[in-house]
Image (tube, helix red, strand yellow):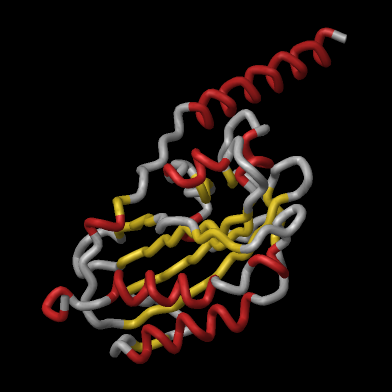
Length: 211
C-alpha cells in the first residue's frame, strides 16, 4: 500500500513539473509584414481554408485548396520567383483563408479564430495558431449590424536568411465583404479569395527597386 502511495505521489509531482514547464514556454511573436523585404529566390506555398461551425469555432474546409495554391504559384512564378515543392526554400508561405461571420464570433469569449486542432497548419507555423487576433474597424462596426459575411486572410512567411535564423512574418490584409449566406459557408462565400490573395502576394513580393 505504501509503495502504491509513493508511486502516486511521484506521478503527481511529475505532472506538476510538466505543467509548469509548459506554462513558462514562450513563443516569439512573428515580425510584422511591414518589415518584410523580398529578394528573388525559391518558394513553397500552403493554403489552409476554414469556415465557422455553429459555435463559432473554426473547421477545416477540404475542398477548393488546389486552385488557390496553383494561382498563388503562378503569381509568384510570373514575378521571377522559383517554385520548389520539396526541401528548404527561401520563402515558405502559409495562407490561412476563412469565411467568417462577425456576429457569430462576437458571442465567443476570445473573439478570435484559431487554436483548433482541426486546422492543419504547417510544421513551421504551428506555434502561431491565431488566424484573426486583431479585428479591423470594419468588422468591429458590423458585429451588431445586419448579418454579413467576410473573407479573412492571414499570411505567414518564413524567410530563411543566409547565416541567420529564419524569420517568420505575419500579415492580415483588410477582410473582404462578400454576399451574405446563412452561416457564411466557404463554398458560397469564397469566390473572391483568389483575387484578394493574388493582390496581396503581388504587393508583398514586389522587389523594392520596382515599387
